[in-house]
Image (cartoon, rainbow, N blue to C red):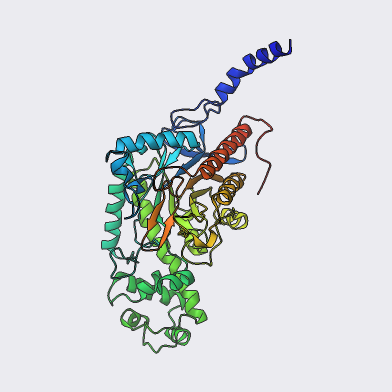
Amino acid sequence: MVRRLVVLLFTLIAPVIARSQELDPYGGWKDVPLRASGAFRMEEIGGRELLVTPEGHPFLAIGINHLGAIKSHGESEPDLFATRYQNSWSNYADDVLENLDEWGLNAVDNTVALLCESKPYFAAANFVKTAKYYGKPGEANPYEFPDVFDIAVQRRLENFVAEFCSKHVQNKNLIAYYWTDTPTWDLHKTRRFRQTDWVSEIRRLPAGTAGRERYGEFLCQQYEDSIDRFNRAYDLGLESFESIAGADLSKLDLSRYEIERDDQAFLGVIAKHYYATIATAMRKHDPEHMIFGEKYLLGDLPDQVLSAAVEHVDAIAIQPGDGYLPIYVPGDRFPSQEITELREASGKPIMICDHQISFATERYPKSIWPYHQLASEAEAAEATNRFMIDAFRRPYVIGYMRCQYIDRYSSRRGASKLGLLRDDGTPYPLLVEATRRASEEVRESIHAELVGSNKGFSKSD
């Protein structure tokens, strides 16, 4: 009798369960119908901000980056692209899609074109070479702080944007555009890391250049056209503000209060001008898709830069943790206070655009995230699971992208970037399972919130 009741009950509720798990072609929940716009967008639903698929259903982006790194094997790493996939992107894409579905991941980056035809994706481009991983001047791929006030530079950027958008504008799987990855903005941290910064590079441009002229105009405004006030502040003896454009400013004491204050303000001028150039071009060439802007390191996003960005972007893309300096917030736990402050300052949804928690392996005892490297796969798996769940307790976190699919060793940095797969293609079982469980729990909880169940997340900040 009891067994018959159980069977009858399951027969009644099974169609409801099936409907609740039914997804549209992009992975959105079909039982929560919203406005279909033909492109990914965002909407606040019951106090939670969520992505919405082109067909008008809520979507939670949980995916993985750097999928194209399969071809970037080191000298001691197997060339799986040649041996396992016969140098075929199609063979590789089929394998990746099978893994993503098994692991509960539904979003990719734009490094493998075939995957962008099958999964929702984010398209990223370094429009300027300010990313932390660019090398020093004289190296093969050096960093650059361009003169964004120069018309020729602006046109180059606009053409870059136009060409980039042309590759993605027709793809309905595109979620949003990213700009430069790990940009170096913070003056103190950039000077410590690069021994220069964007303001200093503008200041040392030759006389007559657009950036140098704009810098002089800025100082004239700051000091209300009083060259005497300026000279006292900068310990200089210039005759006029016009002479700033040709003056030797290489020996300024950057620790002086007035210079520090002015540099911070001019950094905001640079950001405002640069972002306006990129965003205006992008909205022109692709007005339908969202812009998530630069992929900032948490701790390298000064207030004046954030203020310049918010008027142009639909969400703030952030990367907790850093592998270059030990002065950033570690990424082995969800940085609740910092993310909350970022949300309050920007008023925008937050996208965890690139993150992972590394661990020491026998083959790779050192990772490129040494400041939050854990001792074992088990510890990293547990921390990853906890991080993902903690992130989505915040109703303004709209997605999470893991950094790296397969292990890759960086000879330049003498460390490894750990994936969910070892370099021989075998998975890290604890890490994969922790990622899958977190993805499943997050989706079940948020879906429950959307359909009015009491099984959703407990309220958090």
